[in-house]
Image 1 (tube, helix red, strand yellow):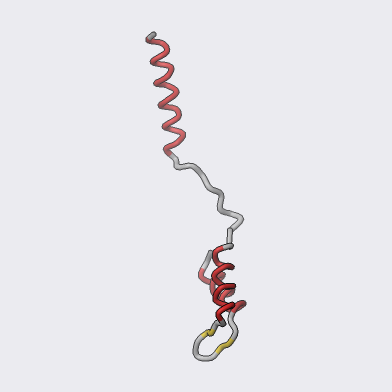
Image 2: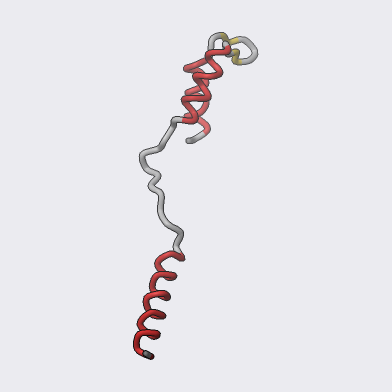
Length: 69
């Protein structure tokens, strides 16, 4: 979530403006929920890069052990 997206959400839930942005109690809760529920569509969880290397190592170790017996 970018800074601008957070600021836009903040203004959506604000209840008053002066020299500062003011929130009602419900506005604070709504803003916090909106930030918490933000899930960017471009982010896809990926396993760490070493996982593929670890599987290749384990498979080669299994083949080595199988060949030795």
